Length: 101
Image (cartoon, rainbow, N blue to C red):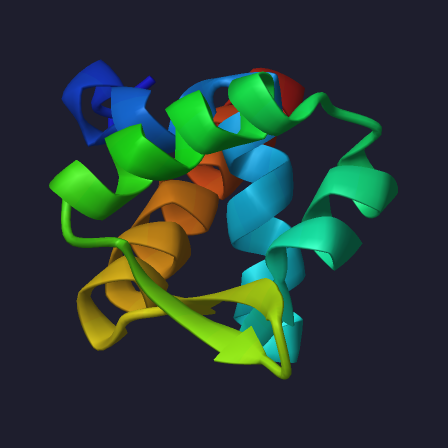
């Protein structure tokens, strides 16, 4: 396994839930908290904890506002997050391709 480097697997992204968040945001670019919660079938607390980890890494931005009197939270993938996600996918691709060889 020449081209694969285990250190290229980003542990912030690698978890099932965070991978799902990044995959969704990679194509949608931004989503409302309630949309992500429903798509990934998570509780408020669980989604919040995973978003906090991604936000601390600089991979997502969280914007809180109000729509009328209702709180509205939007999450967007950052340029750094998009780059990290592409690197993650490349690393996984190398692993899969080398395992087949």
